[in-house]
Length: 260
Image (tube, rainbow, N blue to C red; front, side, top):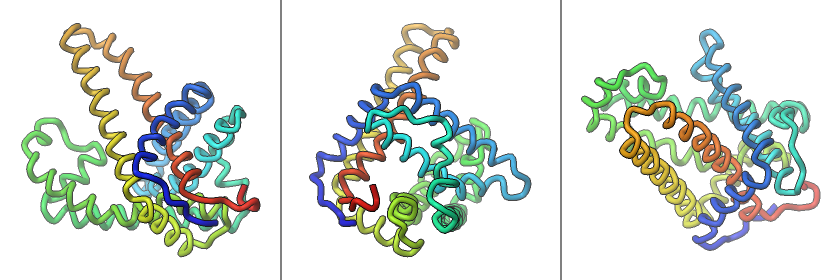
């Protein structure tokens, strides 16, 4: 396995490629995305550990999503069971490593949220868990901004280390420490492309919000119409976001035959 240097503009191409993959395999990939989100929601219902459970299991489930997109890129239709590939396709050692990465993700997230809570008295945590109403949210704009910046600054290195770590653990058989190191190094080596990738998705989200605002302005008091547009648009964009992770890996990592 070797890291490949890619140009900055490749980050935008990954978004285009993600949209192409969704168009090519809309049904299977959108169903897998729905199943993925539903599984994470169900995990929150687990007593005591509910809030942390999705942070742990997302590392395992993300391998299944990547496997599904890889299949779609090869012209295959991934079955719904592909979502659980991380649990059953790569052996007990890889599965345990993925769960270990999940605990690291949960710890990094909670530590970053705890640090952010020092400036907003835990408001960001309440926003993340959906326990803050809109009136409180509007009154805490400045505090939430600073808390969000602190969280982003502290969690970003962990996100870089975890970006490809599940794939390295499952597909390449690397240990936890190696997976984290190579993931961080891969993202850092191509940081320009990944910044372009993130900015491109922010632009997509902003453009989508403008479309929704235009619908509200042109057809006020029509919540049904808004829902008809919002639901499929959100699902398609979410699916394309997940699908675009695959080309980012495919272009950034030179794979050996053993890892194919």
